[in-house]
Length: 176
Ligand SMILES: NC(=O)c1ccc[n+]([C@@H]2O[C@H](COP(=O)([O-])OP(=O)(O)OC[C@H]3O[C@@H](n4cnc5c(N)ncnc54)[C@H](OP(=O)(O)O)[C@@H]3O)[C@@H](O)[C@H]2O)c1
Image (cartoon, rainbow, N blue to C red; front, side, top):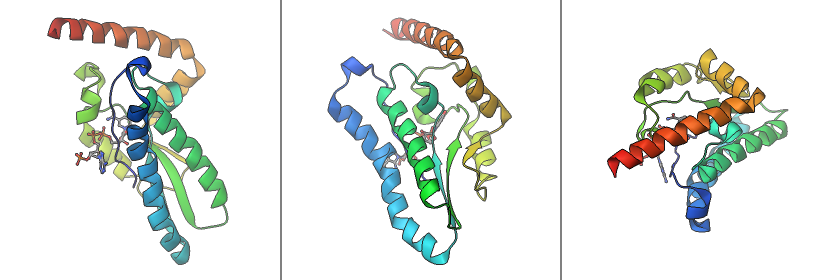
């Protein structure tokens, strides 16, 4: 289960290459290191499932999260390719999509609590899929449909982006 991640909000031009490398080191290369460690043993036993926790942000983007989004997009294409390499084995590799949940890192984004799920709900739903070998595992149908709509209708994402940035500015302004 590759779940660890760091999320550091910051617009691209305010960030350095070192910032991008740091987030890739954990969110992407961290996953690869774990996979390298377990894959030979899974292949030897001819069984095993590797779950890579991704994010909808990796598919549709989010302002202020260029590095984080890129790591999630990278893990999606990595997983697709590794699955093809493992097509003759009983070893599976998946991506899991958590629903937006009020965890420590997600809270730093400033989305209203009302729009964020209970992390325990999300964790339990995904834990219930631990034996699944489906390529993409969603928390629930809301996550699945929400992401499909966002990909099919990019103007929804743009509208959400405007709202996200306005709310963030108001919050930062009122805090300052
Ligand atoms: N929350 C959401 O809305 C949401 C939505 C989509 C996807 N996700 C994904 O879900 C996963 C879990 O995120 P979360 O929201 O639960 O974030 P979180 O509350 O910030 O937890 C991140 C976890 O990663 C661990 N971690 C960070 N850097 C590490 C490192 N270098 N080595 C080992 N562990 C490290 C942290 O451990 P410590 O506590 O010890 O630092 C922590 O347990 C991530 O892959 C995230 O991208 C979350």
